[in-house]
Image 1: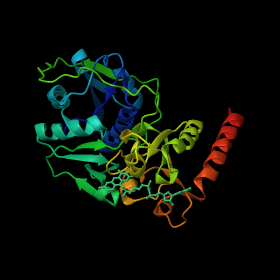
Image 2: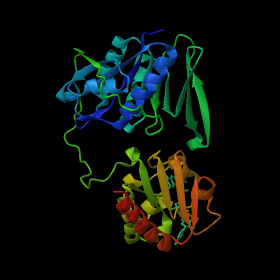
Image 3: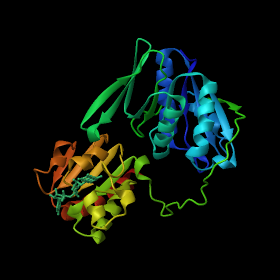
Image 4: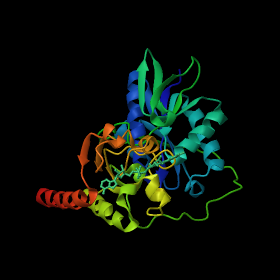
Length: 329
Ligand SMILES: Cc1cc2nc3c(=O)[nH]c(=O)nc-3n(C[C@H](O)[C@H](O)[C@H](O)COP(=O)(O)OP(=O)(O)OC[C@H]3O[C@@H](n4cnc5c(N)ncnc54)[C@H](O)[C@@H]3O)c2cc1C
């Protein structure tokens, strides 16, 4: 068995993405169960000064490659660099975020290192010194458990917002080791990144999401969803019907052909709950559905259901949220 669990952190725009801390926390749980240490791999521009932060989530030592060429994820350079760093760690298990970049990186690392990747893992257990991973299949209709044959290296990407983050221990810092790994020439380069400047919370990282569907009737009515989202500190999502109607951008779409989200709270407004929508939000911790049709399939997955006309309910609910927030603050 290798000497450690190796977690790969995701560093963007000068900070670790939250999912990195979830992956570190899960890595720590696996490492403790296997009786081995937890090491980190962090690449990016400016990451060296931040890498010790991973120690708050149990990472003992972080191998870092810091270079301006690594500012943006580019498979051509990230894959060979990260692959070399993983080899240096001599891991028993590799774990990384199932973010957009992480899924791409994981698949390429699997091929390059000739190891078997399981993507989008939602639960990990260790039994008798072996690791087993649970992951959703068939659009989330059921789960598969995978385990690795003896002598193979488990590598898995973990779905964001599912693994519990350990409470950060701010007294702990990870030891940082700079890796002198050459950065290969790349045929492509990122010239510019168009960031959403609206200040919106990114859907896949949001703790609370309020989504609207065809029941909103028209684009302008999404103001109701936006106002409720603002009052709750939530991100705004949409069903494909709302996106196809041109009421919302595709980046807001939740579901099989949109984003997979796992917030603590998902509020579905005027959404029927088609299987393709459920594939994207069905694993939210709590689901609240607002729909005038008591037979809408969303109610079979909702923790709380409100059978009511959304145009009556949502404005009143928003006012109540605002009132509660003002009395609590
Ligand atoms: C290959 C494929 C991929 C797909 N991918 C996705 C995907 O990624 N995401 C996705 O969402 N869909 C996806 N779909 C589409 C999916 O099948 C549904 O058509 C879609 O989710 C329906 O969106 P909706 O719930 O907003 O609309 P509808 O199914 O039309 O539901 C609207 C709901 O609003 C309620 N309503 C209407 N008026 C009111 C009111 N005044 N007050 C309260 N409730 C009201 C109605 O009772 C109804 O339940 C995909 C389909 C296919 C075939």
